[in-house]
Amino acid sequence: MDSAIAQNINDNRLRSEAARQKDAPWRPIHYLGSKLRALPAIEEALREVSEEGAPVCDLFAGSGTVASWLSRSRPVTAVDIQEYSRVICDAMLNPSRLALPELEARITTAIAESKVSGVLRAARPLIELEECLVEQAKLGEPTGLANLIEASSFMTFSRNHADSRIMEAYLASERMLSATGKPSDLSTMVFRHFGGAYFSFEQAAKLDVLLDVVHSLTLGERRSPLAAILTTASDIVNTVGKQFAQPIRPRDKHGRVKQTLYSQVARDRFKDPVTIFLSSLEKYSKFPLPRFEHSAVRSDYLDFIRLGSFKNGVVYADPPYTRDHYSRFYHALETIALRDDPQISTNTAHGVTQPSRGVYRLDRHQSPFCIRSKAPTAFAQMFGEISRVGLSLVLSYSPYSSEKDSHPRVMTVDSIAKLAKKEFATVEVISIGGFSHSRLNKSELHKEASREAEFLFICRS
Image (cartoon, rainbow, N blue to C red; front, side, top):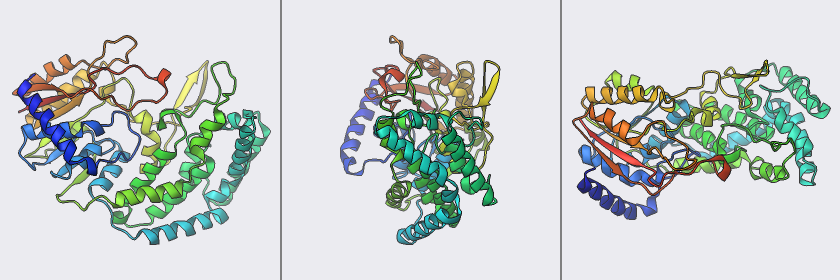
């Protein structure tokens, strides 16, 4: 480790933090491994290997916080294989300019019309049943609500459900969807895939209405509103940790309904998506007009580097580094961003094959960086391709933690450094530790963090 470089980065980071306290970055979605607290250090590390104002490629852009931060002083190309990331980054880098009062009026009209002949009308039987069962849970009778949550969405619902009220409500909504002539239309996608599982049925239907309105806008106009829908979905999702890894479990391991079920449901399922959407859109509208030319690209990291379109700049990379497949935590956001009607993956247990409880996309991306047997090759290929085109690299990575019961990283810092040194002229490893990443917020569901939670690899070609 070069102590002079480390000291320079840390000194500049402190000055940068003090100067920008009034202009703090905003996290658009709940995101594992957010780099909010590392932004000044990342910026200073990039200055060590590139000229002031040189273009930067954020190769695993995720929630866009790094790309947005760097866009104030550099041209940024945000790259990610997930569409939800491209949508969010595009809105932060190139925000739309549209008349918010006019859009709000269009949404109000669309909501009213949907209650008469659209998805909100078709959802009414399930909305009314859910409201009834939530009220019963509030009064100390949560079993019906637990049954409804376990019934999950249209994509996983069993037509042989033991609770007749639930069965009747699902079938009634199904008939109403068919009566509209659009039982599997994209205008009902969120309701059918995620209503009951991650959102209340009313919330899911309103998200569908918002998508209808936003997709009626021009491509330039819809940039920020579409991102605001993703922010809204991330805000209202009713799960532990605000992720989409799996719906809440209303019963304990002994099959008893949890006494906290009502409070857990009430925390999120009473939120109004339209109100949160408008508030989120206002935040996106406050992003400044870009000083530089920015772009957001949906692409595999290797495909993008091999394309050779990014030149004369520096690469920042923050690949996944745990066994958890990140896409499992954001699959619903991906489906909403794509607005398609994907097949659902299945699980087989005791000889019975059923749709996945998490309503996962069948084509859900799984990163090789999250697979122990594939990660070394993935790092070696990334280093090789970036070096081949003559670019320098700043890489974020958390170290392997050997603490008791700690969640192991896929690779160690030393093993990554050895791979990097095979491809780059010089490699420095700088600790910017002291902060820990956002994790699932229930203590028994996560492992202890390493005390040095983050390292930067500064790799010069």
